[in-house]
Image 1 (cartoon, rainbow, N blue to C red):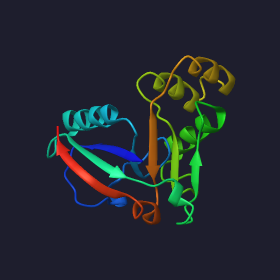
Image 2: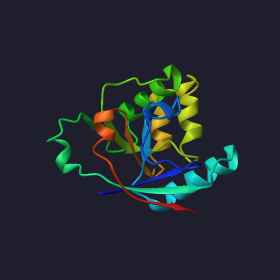
Image 3: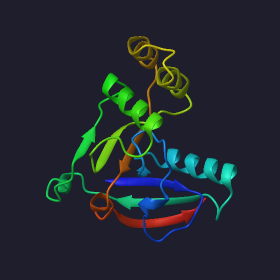
Image 4: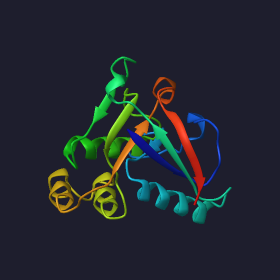
Length: 161
């Protein structure tokens, strides 16, 4: 499977110590199956923080082979209560609020974030948040949280946007 990562910096290997805190699925290295989404992330990061330039990375990852590596993978099938609670816990507590090597699921983006933020701060109950989220089709994200998971990624290409 091809995975894309957008960044404002150039790098040769993934360094989990550089990951940002308070992300949807916790500290980790985030990718997507959507090239355009990764490109938008790269441009937004470069616009906001500067850096080397908007960079797009292409990786290969074999989900079928991840069983052989003994990776613990959590997959969300949509914007559901379990997803909402994981996003809340990781955004409020920071760090990594689970024991998975890889998490795959929807991204809390500009469309869904207002609802997620209201749920996280306690203004909106879970049932009401899920009703609002039902109207959105979220893009995907696949986050890697351990060295074992990162070691299964193979960098194919890096290009400046």
